Image 1 (cartoon, rainbow, N blue to C red):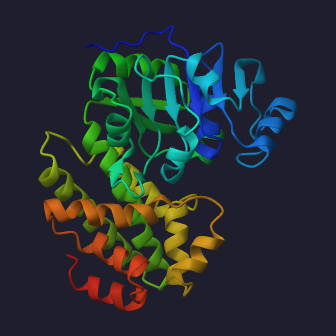
Image 2 (cartoon, one colour):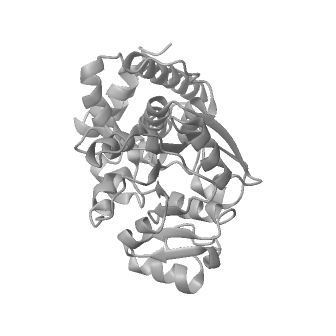
Length: 335
């Protein structure tokens, strides 16, 4: 069965964090009405009365005339054709728990760069398996795109990924603005796993900075991370992909270097000497790399790809290994 979306397809966003808020703002530039499932009462009230998200990107003025915000998930889903998932992957099950409306006639877009904890599946794989959705009706929005910069209308590059190029183009039209440059891909597997892996590598970069390693080492660590990512993608799912493009390498670079990166920040705190538990408690937003490190380790038991950087991050996060000793041991394996 073909799943075709059209320019008249109605859009809705699920989630109320920074990326969800930025995406709603982008969609209102092109759409007459955007549905928005906001389950947090404080945020929902601030959107309705003040035209802003009081908790995330609170300086961003939202066009509430084009937003239909609601705490009724089924209402939001029923009134939309395209559903954009923009919640942390750790909460995807709780966000969707109230759902009784069928997704079978919807086109689902994941803007989530994480793994569903406990299931050891990507969001796309989880949606496909749990809701019995075809991969033809699932798409991705990915690329180096921190919500803070998108909200400030700084030039950003997004990659829209669908198995059907026509669907990708149609979805891209809904995201097209003067400050967003779009590219397109059919590599659902590779782009999603790249977006997950880069969070692990950003954690490693943060640890290195916190431990006092310099720019020379960081450049080597990140270039080795890029090679490790490419190796995993090609060995686990061979495909004619160019991992030097923004959806792969670009996303890795911005997440490893940017001050907006929560994964880099988590690694930085651990490198400075915080315990993993303390560092996680101090984070105000979810660092997807924490869950990803465990899930990728589990998934790689099947593929047996050589991944020394991802393995190092896992041992520090889950086996209480010393970050300093682990980074020193890793340094002898880098080229």
